[in-house]
Structures are given as structure tokens and as C-alpha cells.
Amino acid sequence: MTIEQKLEDLFKPTIESMGFELWAIEYIPAGRHTTLRVFADKLGGINVDDCAAISRQLSAIMDVEDPISDQYMLEVSSPGLDRVLIKPEHFKRYEGKSVRVRSAVAILGRKKINGLMTKVSEDSIEVEVDGELFEIPFGLIDKANLAIEI
Image 1 (cartoon, rainbow, N blue to C red):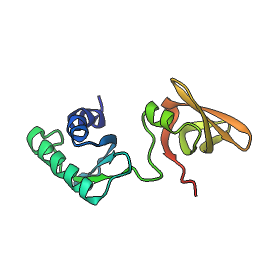
Image 2 (tube, rainbow, N blue to C red; image 1 turned 30 degrees about the horizontal axis):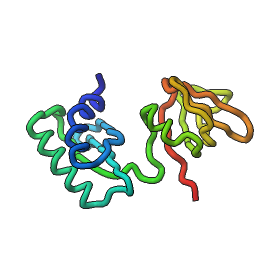
Image 3 (cartoon, helix red, strand yellow; image 1 turned 90 degrees about the vertical axis):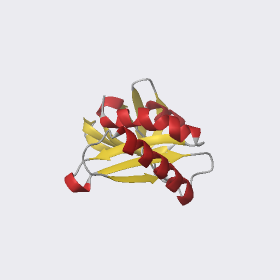
Image 4 (cartoon, one colour; image 1 turned 135 degrees about the vertical axis):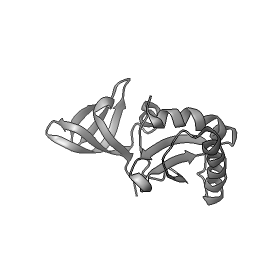
């Protein structure tokens, strides 16, 4: 189990009890500059006061449970318009939308695939780029974001 998964199990009940959805957790180890980034959302979006309230609750949990022994900076924010897509349910929610995907290995000669996510299956997504379909298994996705549509 990764640290992100452990923290999700720890944080999710509290965040949900406050009326928010725990979107994602990023743990970025960097010595004295380690960052723990928690993304939360709710219908209609969240604001700075919401983030502050969530941060206070999570800080209290971290003080009691102490799951990270090193120093870290806790950041709580909205996933934003270009939200990171991590879990299969994230991808499913935005099926039919434009995405930016970085793959661990080249797929049909590309590691960066930006296009319309036409299909989400149990183990992969399908992205259309200039009429060409790229099937990308979840296990090969390094990073995926919703593309901002203006």
C-alpha cells in the first residue's frame, strides 16, 4: 500500500463528513521540502475557506496519527479545471472530454497523447488524436489531466 493510499483511508471519512469529495492525494518527497497535496472538491467547487477548514481537520489527524515521520508542507486545494485524473472513476466521469496523457512507454510512437477520451474500459482508456485511436492501459499512464476547453 502506498503512502497516498494510506492517507486516503485516513482522510476520506473526515473530508466526506464535511461535505466534500477527496479527489486525489500527491505525496512529493523532497527532503526538507516534502509536499503533501490534498485535492478536494464538491458540487459547485470549493473556495479558500473550504480549503482552510479541510486543512485544519487534516492537520489534527496528522498530529494524532503521525503517518509521515519527516517534515512536510500540507497543501489543500481544488483539483482545478485541468484536474489530475488518477482513478478509473475519474476517467469514467470525464469520458467524452479532452485529456492530456503522458505514458510511461511510447504508444504508437508517442508518449504524450492529447485528444478526446472516447472510451473508458475496466483497464484502459481510448484517446482519439487526429482520427487515430490510442488505447492506453491504466498501468502505463504516468500522468493524465483533463484538458481545459475554452
